[in-house]
Length: 354
Image (cartoon, rainbow, N blue to C red; front, side, top):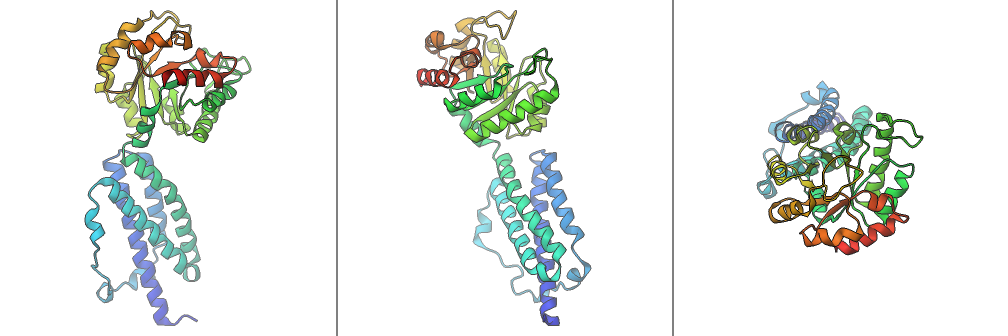
């Protein structure tokens, strides 16, 4: 049996940890709101905080007695070391998780509903913390991986889309763009719909995640958000990069097709993470567009401060000319998608690019 004194102590303990968890959630929530502009993260954090607030019983608040708390005001040197937003976010996520564990343990006998809610919130926060830290670091993990990529696969509609992409990933490709323009055909031969696009993008996103590869969506920010892609690739006629950044958040990648050095300079000033440079050669994937040739590749190599991928009819046979012009990264479509052995084709291109 719990004595009245012990029950009062448990109530004080539950009150303190409810306050602690809700305060920590609010710290992180405000960072997402005012610094990251991430309404999606704000909504998830607010939901956790409000659900805990509904279970903050009046009897717990009435048991509060700060004057008799032997640890009130106690600080630690580690608090002074939180000198950047990532440290603050990490510390408060840890604070909330610890408080939720206390609520879970001591609430089982006293308040099962609170214990269950605390356990649910703790597991939700484990996943949320990863997203928060990535958002606070500005997507550095994605940009670091982008810097290592030399070969970029852009897909084209195919009955064997997943098989081809998985083979390319098996061959070493670590950057994939899903591209299915208006007028493309679905696997059954009928005009492609957004339902088809969503299904295909979700499947390719899962494949890329399995291989640790970056996955981007061409043009369609809505589909990129729906499948949690690593970013989008925009053409010159698509939404402005600034608007795409506002919709996607700071941690996602934004690339842009460019056909002249003036467009590359604008993409850099717009905050794009990389650019496509081309088409270097005439290509059926860009019918009616005159190739820019290797001169633009030379200009990009001399000036671009961000990664650029030469694109347009590039294959193993003409890759050396692109490299001599300064192109160290290339994007390809048919060189892999129409190869008899896509994995072998990817490996050969990567070996040449190395």
